[in-house]
Image 1 (cartoon, rainbow, N blue to C red):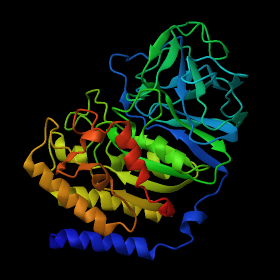
Image 2 (image 1 turned 180 degrees about the horizontal axis):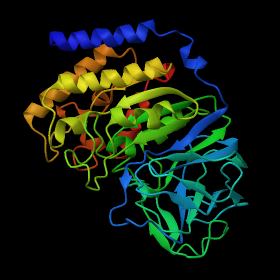
Image 3 (image 1 turned 180 degrees about the vertical axis):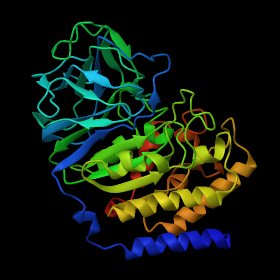
Length: 402
C-alpha cells in the first residue's frame, strides 16, 4: 500500500477508535425513524413551469411499520416556490400497487395547514399523521400542485411505477385509482417517509447499484431491500443516486444542464444521511463513478480522501460507519486496466481503514476473473448486479456493526 494511502487509513482508524462509545445512542432525540427514503437527484428536464393541476400518486415501500407517519417533500432543485394544494397518504391495496388505497386516505398537514408553499431549494416535513403503516406494504403519497411553479425536483431511477392525473381537479383524496390515467417510473417531490416504531435507521449512501438499477422493477429487490429483510424491526433508508460520485457534481463542469446524477456524495451528505430521522448507522458505497465516468479520477488518493471525509463527518455526528468495497466492472463500456488499478487501491484502503466492512467486491467477483462480476450475479452490463447479486451483497453486510 502507498505510504500516503496508509496515512489516510491511520487517520480514519483513529477517528473510529476515539469516538465515544455512547455517541450512537446519544444523537437520537425523537421516536421518528426513516422507514423509506430516496435522494432528490435533479430537476425534470423540459418542465420549467412545474406540473400545474397535476395530482401525482407516488408509490413507495417502507422498510418498517409504525403507528404514525410523516412525509418529507423536496423542492431542492426547484427554481421557484411550489404550492402544494393537497397532500395525502394511504396504505396501498395489493402489491404491486395500481394506486388504489386499501383504507382511509389521510390528509397530510404542514404546520396545521392543508395548503403550503415550499421555497426554491428547500424541503418540508409534515405534521404527524395517525395512520397504521403495516410492514411490507406499499404506501401512496399523493401531491396536488394547483399552480405553475419552477422546475420539478425528482428521483429518476425509482424502479417502481407510480401514477398521476393531469387534473386540473384535485384527486389526492381519491381512494380508487380511476382518475390516475398516467404512469411514471420516477418519484416526484417526495424524499422520505418517517414512522414511529422501529428502534433505528440505517442509511445506505451510494450510486446506481444502491439505487437498484437492473433489479426487477416493482419487486423491491435492491440490496437495501434484502438487507431490510435481514434486519427485522430496523428501518433502511436508501440514499442511492444513479451515476453519483464522491467528488464531483453531476454535469461537471457545466452545472446548468439537467444532469440526473445529483450533487456529489460529499455535498449531499447532510441532507441525505446525517439529517435522516433516527439515523444510527451509514453504509458508504461510492467510488466506481469517480473512477469510470468522464472526467475519470486517476488518483486513488483523491477518492480515498473523499470517503475518509464522509466517514469522519458521520462519526462526528455519532453514527456507526460501515465501508463497502467497490465491485468489479471489467466488461463495462468504459473499463480500462488503469481504472482497475484505481479500484483495487481504493478497496485495499477500505479493507484496512474501516473497522466494519461490507466486502461487496469479494462477494460478487468472478473467482476465475476477479476483475469481472460473477456471471451468476451479472445483470448483463458487467457493472450492475441482478437480483441474485443484490441478495449476495445484502448477505455480507456485518449486522453487528449496524
